[in-house]
Length: 429
Image (cartoon, rainbow, N blue to C red):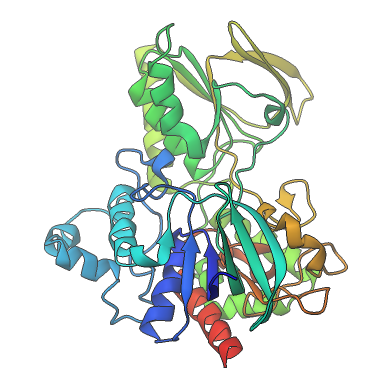
């Protein structure tokens, strides 16, 4: 039988990279391996590497600093080793550029390359018996290779949310934000010229960034934002609300009832969802105002709209929308539709996944609570429903159990890595 690892991670994005750093720095003594679908050097958030875009969180909330501010893998040390620390500190910006943070992540990942199998798409997870370790996980890749592990850590990131009716369309002129730049590159290679009518679906930070970028790239195009909310709104960046990204709030949220969690979600939602930073909102508003002065309004915001039907045809994507206040209906056409609609959390709801799809083969061994959510412990370990199920941790997928700090941001990344690292070390004793 092949070698059995102590820890096998599925995915090697920032969440599992932070875990790998924690396991090495805290000298856990565990044999770890990570399986990553992308090729080496694939940039973090490559589909949204827009000129001038930033990361929207304090640079010290990086892969390591809240857990170990002396780590060599901090963003500050990265800048120092690249000879850019003073230049960066002199930048007249609040947050780092997204492309620089992507380079930082790639730099750190390079130090852990020997632990990673890149270009490895996992297609199956099952429980097998090992003569020495008993029940273990067998993880199979698309190329037929497999790995055994005593413990599994899933850090795949959340799946893109593609809402109806666009989920029924398989057309290159409709893309989720994660495929934005590759889609534009593909469009340039097709006949017919640049898009003239563009629809951006959603009211998030990404929706605003994409609208600004599209108006730069295609100055002759008409770009329309279609949002469910009345209009675009600014994020809640109050320091009181930002304490939702403190470990104390995570503990408080975890202990709350499901009803209490819903109330906390409603309060915290404007800090991360369906809202945008003030700088990009102001830039967009000024640009729209200037266009009106020039008599050529090419950017518009259609708020309180719900898209009800969509179909692809030779002349583009046609869709119907309902104005949620008046009930009025309207028809629209676009040469390109960009879905700035976010990602799926874990849970039983329409915008959720009951479990990470990579775990479909072992989902019947996982426990769910009375509300249909995965039963996850405070240290991110899933609770089993079948005796003999090996330990399984979720890294960066637990917003429904641990709150807004698990919503895909870097805010609590390093602290969560320590929590999982401590749990793995306890299991190894």
